[in-house]
Length: 195
Image (cartoon, rainbow, N blue to C red; front, side, top):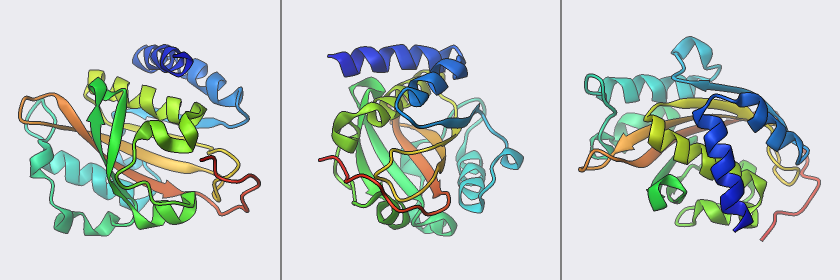
């Protein structure tokens, strides 16, 4: 219950653009939120795979809405392959199942999460709560978001640069996220991966 209460509070912070409160949440766990940008433009994205995904998402976007999940094509996403997560959202965005977990992401995280739930990340710890709250806010805002954060110490990279793009189901609700995730510099993990 505490995780959902914490997630609800964080989602409120994301919705109200209280980035300092989100950064404080991560800092209380020894990590850092370096940047958070709603509706980024390509010039604000430092990595070509996520710039490509933003351009691709925009090309599929109807006027004043978000693209349909059924419109995306794996063949058209080749320039970003290995860096892509597809997340089928559950529980109105409070959870999700990894439909696709990019190979480069799995290599740096230390496991492939395909088929697993967001709530399974690191045994449901603070980073899982962070992502679940952010995904809930994306469902409500219906906007892309770029984040740059430090992961927990068991992950073998110093940071992740991440672009999450909402996709609509047949009923128009946000039902899936297409995420580009690019690792920062490598570091030796200092803790084992939580179960």
